Image (cartoon, rainbow, N blue to C red; front, side, top):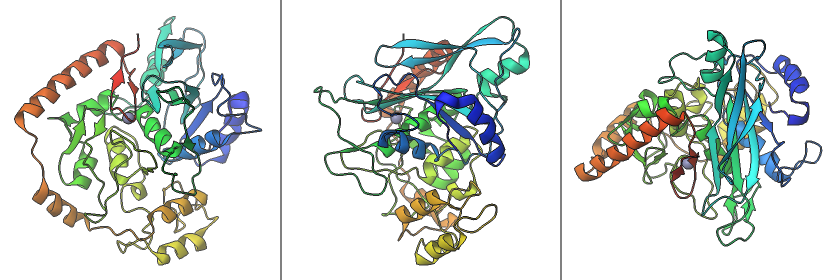
Length: 398
Ligand SMILES: [Zn+2]
């Protein structure tokens, strides 16, 4: 359930009644979209529609996020970086409803080859906040930040011009594979939103890194071992996602690069990492997608189950993303995965154990140095990293 910024408060109140208590809301704010890239609520551009569709990759999460309600001594300023100027935008006493993240969406001419950047928001307190208010701002009342990450929201920026100064060819269409000379907007913004949700940039993520591999429980169980990382912020380039059969496994969304004409979906491995940094991910998102009858094959039988369940709510078969609605996005998911085959959980472990790669000592040591630098910057600067999808680099804002 997504809202437009202009009537954010009024709509949010209504929406919280309308959506199941278990789901999250990503509330986009376009008031800093000075180029009009995302249009208006009345006249949305394809960019806005696709961005809001992409956010539904995350709204099925069932976390209970504390509301941020400023007042009295509970005063704060939400801050987010504008990557085109490397300066902060400040929003004094931003109110954030329960179970909601506020995401500022902007379009800029990003530096170099970057297609998109995103980061969780920063914050500054003023006055003398109560412990509850402070906990709501810093981690939405989720407890230990090294185990469970939850921001007030943050910023996502998409690129409008390539490094030669020419307008980017974006593919906004969700229904077709991107043309060979276009970058896929859905792929980029889904990847970036995952960074905003803490992938690669949170203390909870850093806690799960060992020897330049991700060792979170859910990811290890799915992958069959530690999952190699590139630069501590992305999966290594050769990583593919179980539980699909070996040889047919898709590249995960959080890989380090994207090529023209390529679409990457948000795979079970990506979801497993988000579960490991504290998000309450429905089990439907951690297994073979849209395998409603549990026969490890996504086929016409599953499609029929979705069709028959369409419009249903609750424990209706056909709910591919576990958000309790059987709707359009479930149909989109099954359409993307038709023909896929999965392996049984025991087979995943066996297959991966047989082909487990051991990092070379020199490379592992080098990676560890990078990791330590990253961790130190983290403590000093909180959670402010810009992440680019196609160069695997990140810059520290000033
Ligand atoms: Zn990235």
